[in-house]
Length: 423
Image (cartoon, rainbow, N blue to C red; front, side):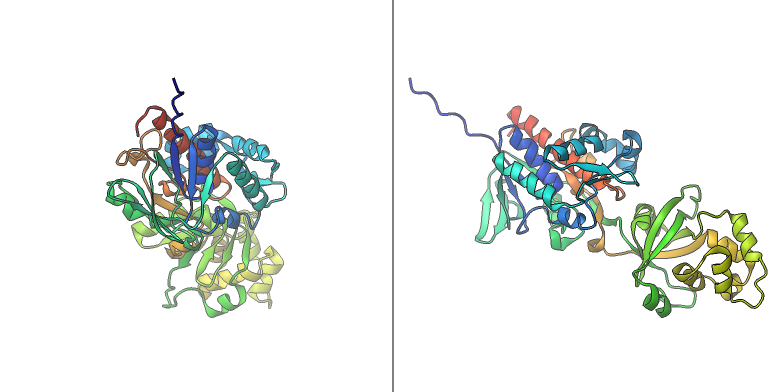
């Protein structure tokens, strides 16, 4: 008797060529399924490459428990994925691509050459060698009436049938790199509840002053916009114990930078609840309040206040400009009030910067809309991963690690679903 033909391999469509989608494609291809990866942009990994411009921060060297707590309310939802692919696993994975890593002084993990492009090239070479077929300039536009995938392509609309689908479409920040949130109505139309997309790891605009001025004064903008403020410590209204030290940048309209991003979720939520939020700065974190008060109170004779503070405390430049900007003349010339402000200078914030300027996105597909294998409960056979899920984390390698970890988890879920014959 003739040998019956071998069954065609299962076909999985991965939509989105960021870290989550690429990791899903890697896991799927290693299992022997045919993987077709679709991306709307001319090439994959564009936001990944942008993230590497200042030195690609792959992950963090923190121990598992504090690492997990960086995801706040979603730490438990992410625990299974991160248990399978944590910071140590990211470093081992990179080493497997020939990319050695090192731990910086802050605990962040970087490739030895600090570059994203060599890692991405090695990764794409591995995926192509494993049989992953990549389709650039294929913009997903939802499903047709039969449940097949619709794409807009350079040659016109096309329809793709797949045995399972992994969606790794990103959030809605940096739309020019492909993350535009266009997927929200298509999932909502299939009965998936979507948490509103919001900016995360973002800058903020300052609130109008009591003088009716909107934003910083022209003097401060013209002389200091774009400059860093360091070293400083920051805390919120009721969280003086929750101090973090670092630096940030004064912008034309407010503030941004790593120290701001560490507080951005709480600042954003406080503004939503109360209309504004107050961020406090300790301009001299190396000095105690008593030391500051002693030096401020020291007789200054004919010297100006700026000269006095520079001489006694080393305060100058932008730090001094912020004091003049945010305090009244009466506060500046009252030693007790001035000393208190140097240790807790209030900056009142009115709004986060627009979503498309944010480093990452909060909101998206809630974990409650997924089963334990990252599959949409409302759309069997469709799995979700990466930043389109409703979680957020500070910068420091946590974003990239969770994107890759959830990409792996979604791929493993798709494989289990296919193996069970449920397609």
